[in-house]
Amino acid sequence: MPFTKIIGSGSALPENVVSNDVLAQQLAEKGIETSDEWIVTRTGIKQRYIADSHIKTSDLATQAAQNAIKEAGIQVEDIDLIIVATSTPDHIFPSTACIVQSKIGNKGAAAFDVQAVCSGFVYALTTADSYIRAGNAKCALVIGAETFSHIIDWQDRSTCVLFGDGAGAFIVKASDEPGILSTQLNADGSLHTILHAEGTICHGKVQGDPFLRMDGQAVFKKAVVSLEQSALEVCKKANIASTDIDWMVPHQANVRIIQSLARKLNIDENKVVITVDHHANTSAASVPLAFDVARKDGRIKSGDKVLLQGVGGGFTWGSVLVQM
Ligand SMILES: CC(C)(COP(=O)(O)OP(=O)(O)OC[C@H]1O[C@@H](n2cnc3c(N)ncnc32)[C@H](O)[C@@H]1OP(=O)(O)O)[C@@H](O)C(=O)NCCC(=O)NCCS
Image (cartoon, rainbow, N blue to C red; front, top):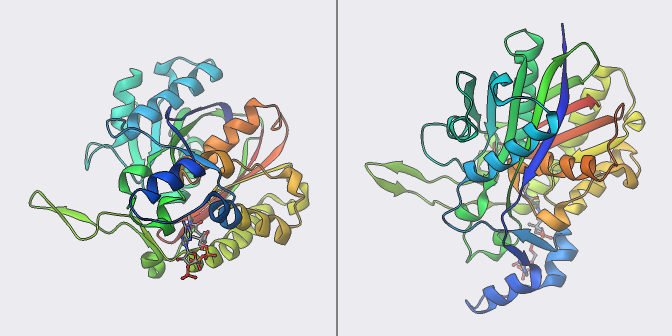
């Protein structure tokens, strides 16, 4: 069976950067109190990128995809599988993957979305790995892309300070050289109410609450426990110790979750990629965005063992262990 090798990555962020101070000022005008100090202390977030309302998830996804295609040095027509992980799709249907396919000019590849919220990218990457190892695809475009700012209740200070918009993309290819070493996906649907956006469209009207809602403390506790178990599971499958990991690229939601996880896994903090300060929580985009930053700045190198981890609504979580 071939390995699935990452041969390129790319990312995209909206132009509009909103610092904590600017956000606090905007919220104060609506009578909502927050501060840079509160946000940094509780989450590590210093700023986020916010898309204008006319920017769609597929716009960011397409830009990230084009950057990844360029870096991988492949032709658009080489891609035979496109998976977009998103919880903020452009439309009910068709999938955002089909919109991206049209925008990049690919014809014929299988294209579909994966919806596993902040675990979406590891779910999508694991799906692409299964296709490639089974011989059903040779070259896949895997994207995590979100415009969460469009589903945030900007009156709710307990959530609106946490999220941002963006996209990250991988090109993965069948290879004889080691690539993805092991994967693990899990979900516990009984916890669907701790992080959800439950609105639906029926007879042309939004029914129920259209905004993201979260029990922050329940999510925090479940995230740390799940990610620790999942990391140990992928290491066991690949027959390595957690201390053999060169780079940990966890979901970027909260720096305290990340630090607590690294401590439990005995992974040195300087082997952990942290971009939540810069990007905030971009849901399915967070892992490929963080990976792309660390690859472009030279931290992640050829041969490194990298642990990618997602966790979020569903409740879902998962890990991908990859050798670069
Ligand atoms: C959301 C989170 C930062 C909140 O931190 P916390 O320490 O649990 O804070 P609490 O919710 O207990 O709130 C503490 C106080 O801060 C207040 N508060 C909430 N948001 C605030 C804000 N933006 N600014 C100022 N105060 C705020 C609360 O109203 C509460 O005030 P009270 O004590 O007077 O009632 C934290 O729970 C968290 O990070 N959870 C995980 C969230 C996450 O990562 N989700 C995505 C996973 S995919």
